[in-house]
Length: 272
Image (tube, rainbow, N blue to C red; front, side, top):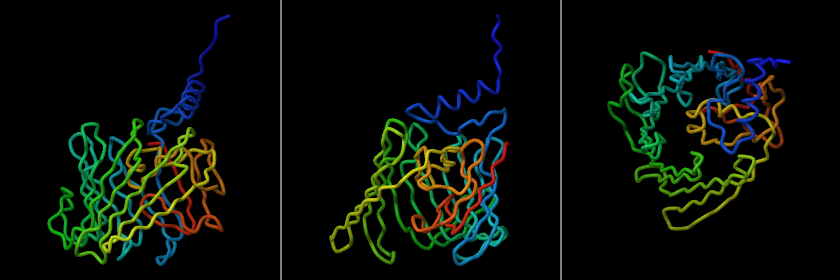
């Protein structure tokens, strides 16, 4: 008897194989012909109240904007700029369109594998909205250096806070991954300007669902989250195992996702 091949079942099998492999390469392709991506974030923003944040992409499915409806001081929109090889070159935390000023901006340097290895953070200046280039800045706040493993996951971040900031320090954060693909231990060592040193460890506890950061490598970079699963238990998930509604509680004081902090969060996804 001739066996029939069902395309949808084949796609599901492919996704299952990817999740079991040693390295899940983003973006995860949800069954279907179109890309599945984060479209909207709805939640309570501490000190700013409820808001709906829209996530926009270009024709190549690279994020270009994360913008809430109530952009204000301490709560900017985020604009992403790429070079002609689609390497992330800049991220600007800008005020509303029409005001060419920003609160902070990140300028990136990539290696030969198109991975960001250096991140210089600038505070308070002006930028060109058409080209997403910085015109000026008040302060070069910090410089970060990134180290990767053979699965292209960030394993270490070294951040130097520069003179002129409120305090000068060197912070080194190291991520230890287990066989499940999750950062089971995160160690932070801080060397202060008086040469004193402190060290602390965090041991996240994960669910067994899909981490939405894996839907795009840019999400993994900006939140430095390369784990396969989520370091929380969501209130609900969709049919593909992605979290939909997350609440804070005794074990989760705030929800950090796509550069924003939430006291409660609902994530909407879409095919594009």
